[in-house]
Amino acid sequence: MKKWHETLAANLGLRAGGVALLVLGWSVAVRLHQMALATSPREPSSFMMLLSAIVFLCGSGGSALLFVGPGLWETLEVSERWRRLPMSSFDSPDGFDRDM
Image (cartoon, rainbow, N blue to C red; front, side, top):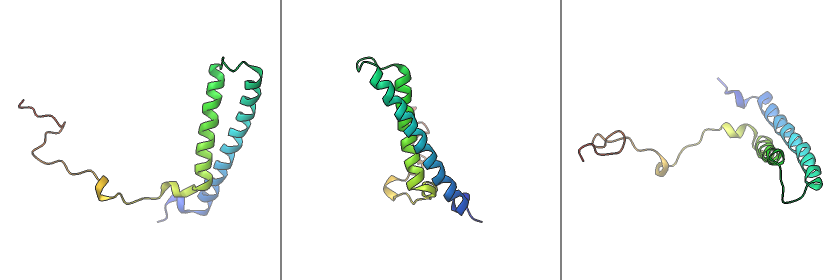
């Protein structure tokens, strides 16, 4: 059975969603630029900070979806160096010695 992200519709949908996020981020950035020109540089409002966060999130998510697309859901093999080791029977579950 195919995974949902391997279909053509998912590929196109994810990339279209990325373009939509980039367009939304661009329009918010234009509004933020207009607000920044109208206020003093030493007094950013909380609304301007919120708009900045929205621009960052839309730009990051949109570019990831547009350029990587369904590759975001690919499974990868973790190197042996970074794998979790099974807990030995000598260690306590929380990592502390209870006898001390």
